[in-house]
Image 1 (cartoon, rainbow, N blue to C red):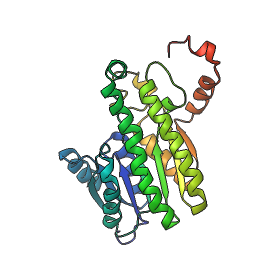
Image 2: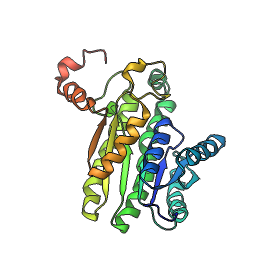
Image 3: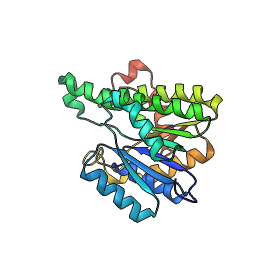
Length: 251
């Protein structure tokens, strides 16, 4: 940890637009950054870019979400790289996949589930053990409004995110007694590669909005945050639709 920094924050899925925006938001708060993503030129470029733009101390780590056997070692390396102490972690990686393909190709459906739930739960579990022993810190999990109710348009991805939200809820209950904050972030349409060409840009919020919401949620020790906030109301309405009516809708 560099001199004068508040601590070190680990960003998992750092090469995504939301990952970069979140890293910048924590840098503005005075934290050192640890950026994790699959290795390669993109991670190197993002690490250099974030360091130049923010002036923060930035290091990079390779992470394969699918290789759950490597996650315990990854967390150990992250702690060592942080000088023995992590302040918090943000889980942001995910795989949107092709919803139509996932209906016919079960291997693609399995990949979506493996990255978004199995891989996420694995690395979160190792981080939870670390923070519980440390008895302070925070874990942020970026889930999705897609997990609030299964819809024909994206039920494989949505079910994975529903599982992630439930996992985070369980961690929040478990780690509250250790003084560890666990926040579930549920974005709606965000202007990223996942929504490119699928929704109007006017309907998609900027990734920076998610980054700012994450930092705010840590400060206020929130439990569940929707981004933008109006998605909380939208999903309340969708969840309230009776099943006999809902199953007839084209959502």
